[in-house]
Amino acid sequence: MGFRTSLATAALMALGVAAINVSPAVADSAYQAFGTRGRAQDVKRTIDVVMRDNSYQPQRIQVRAGETVRFRVRNAGELLHEFNIGTAAMHQQHQREMQAMFDSGMMSATSKDAMAGMDHSKMPGMNHGAMNHGAMRHDDPNAVLVDPGKTEEMIFKFTKAATLEFACNIPGHYESGMVGKVDFAR
Ligand SMILES: [Cu+2]
Image (tube, rainbow, N blue to C red; front, side):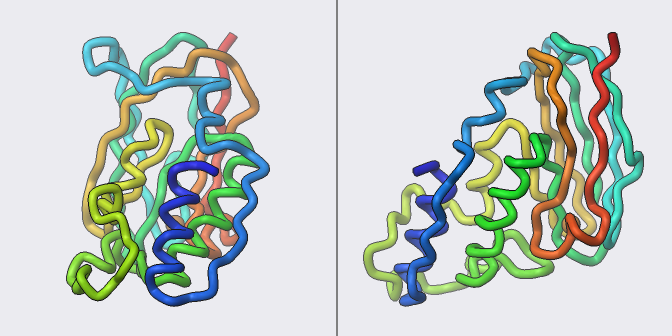
């Protein structure tokens, strides 16, 4: 079971919600098939991405195998959005995990940190150390969640060409158009 899946499940149980059986068909570390966390000193190019409700600008990006790219991701919308690079199968799984986090109240439509103000002592069994709420998804080098009005950066190294999409896995957003193509230059 992946890290995020465990968190989502732990949150559901802690909140007394019936645990959803999220059975990951794709491991959370699946990004390692095509990339890894990039180092700032290797960045030669920055790609600016603007997210709105519900679209991306640009809708297509081009990268090279071996390239380290800094993504500067601005959320110009009024809703919470994600910039996540992965295969279609990875996005499908993340959509299930996101749905579980929304259902549990860990996230809301406008904030990745919906539980920040809640009293954690009333949630028995929760691993407070690991539950860094909104920050948890920042552990994934291939994804960043951006609150409305904010800008976040993500440095990713593309190690291998693959069939990839960038997408927002907040419930309903992928379906309404928050998905774009990653092209690999030859
Ligand atoms: Cu979105």
